[in-house]
Image (cartoon, rainbow, N blue to C red):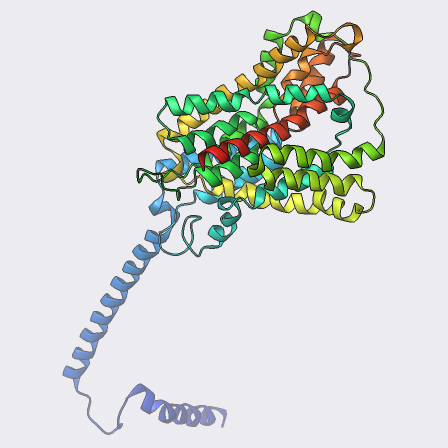
Length: 441
């Protein structure tokens, strides 16, 4: 009985599926010639399907990075890995080098143009994030955070040390002249010159105004887009402060001078700390109004810190806000180094000029510190090493000065003294950027 049910069930199923299978009437004789035609059609369809599958695989491969990679992409990806390695292994500005290194890798993953993927493609996500770099939005926000975390007490207590920060800016103008000599036009040279200030946000701000690939000169020439090379050079040399500066310091400053102990700075009242950002804002921006976005946010952030009434705002500026902006700035600046745009003769020249400018800035601060000691007597003399802190790589250059002094005298603590020229270097580089922007924009 069970077998009978199975037979009836199978017959019923075939009847139901007959229209689908196009079996026709069971009584109709089988046409073997038509079956041969059907077989030939099936073979043809299988052949077409196989060809289509192969074409699909070829098209898929053409969209992958393997098909579009160039030697330049691979070189830049290796550079990005080196940045990450230096940040992790040697602790060289990891908050900057790791995001930049990741950005370099992201920006050099090969892709097919036109799909709104790359940082220079209008409408892409990376292009929207890069807007903050091109329009100079991120640097003032960075300065706001720097102001909210900076203590200007050492500078207030010993204002003459501000001259060291000013002296170190010789690197900016020396590089500016060198860039003109190498064939860059005036706006491009001005943007390159600011690398000598050893201040990444300032370099990005000025290059976004002068060398953004948009401005057109009087003779019809379009300035080059040098934001990526300039930013990478500035941040690279900031990270290499512990490597570059010590040999120069030992070469110029004698061991005897390195042992000079400075008298402790006087105590600074809270009222002085509150007045300083307001007075400094007015003085510096009246000298260089074009630097207002940077200096205004720097001293505003410091006022939030020192007023005693806006601790929540100051805490946000020096923690969450500056962290978010640093991530966006680092990744987008790194991603802007696409191989076809970054690996050029101009980029190599910029890196060479950046190294020279950093050395000149360090030497300018050291020599001026020795010059100042010619007019200072007794315990008023300054340790010439602090002149190297005049470059605005805050606070790394001050730490390097302190470490170098301890090598000559284990009890010679220069960190607080070095912070004075260090923060004045930040102010000085912003003023120098404003002056260049006023004359060259």
